[in-house]
Image 1 (cartoon, rainbow, N blue to C red):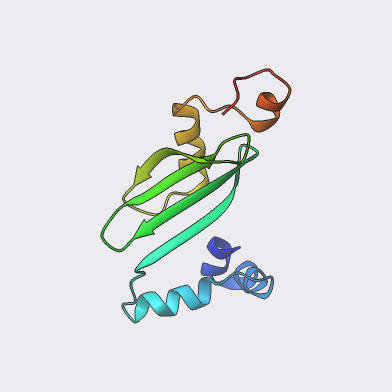
Image 2: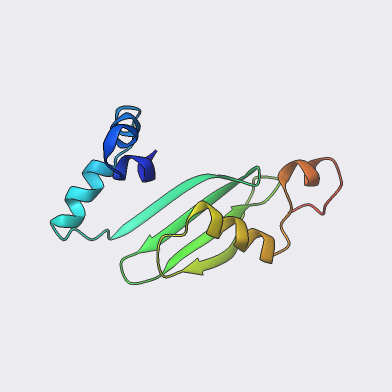
Length: 109
C-alpha cells in the first residue's frame, strides 16, 4: 500500500485510504527528514522477512528460520529493497518457498 499510495491519482488515493502512508512519507522527504532506525517486515516466499536500516548503514535483510527461533542474514542493499529484490536474495541463498520446506520438498531453513 505504501508504494501505491506514493503515486497520485485514483489508485494512490485509494491506497492512502486503505492505510498507505505514501503521502506522509513524501512530505517527510520534502522536508529533508532522515530515518535514524527503520525496522520493516513482511512475508516473502511464505516466510517472515525483516529489513533493518540504521542511519549510517545499508539496509540489511533477514529471513526467519522455520522453527521461528532466529533470523538468517540474506543480503544488503544501499536503497530500500523491493519485494522483488528480497525474492532474488532468497533465491541466491537457496532459500525455497516455505510450503516446499514444510512438506519436505526443500531443506529446512
